[in-house]
Image (cartoon, helix red, strand yellow):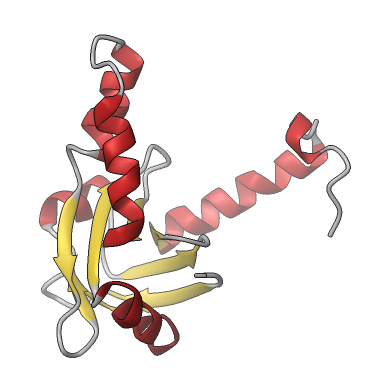
Length: 148
């Protein structure tokens, strides 16, 4: 279970050092084998390989004749890249994925249960400010009765 938000820096080669608190879990769950892909919100998604496989299979079974499904397949499967943590616990983020998410140096790694989101730090901050207005409006029906 991945949770928490951590500010990190990409090195000059586009490598991201996975925080130690997540590294051990990733090594035991998938031997450091991860999948990076593009998300519609403009960030990257990082899945342990075993978590990604069922999602990929479900997407591939959907009809590519539906333009919305095809667009989703193009984004998620088309951008998907297998990466492997190196001995120092780093993953290399390809130039195409860095460009897609506009990742430069300062990034946010955000745990989301079975995966991570990887955001440009400035985009993350803007997204967080925008999401505060959601709390003032109507909540989705799924949140009726939800309490913290």
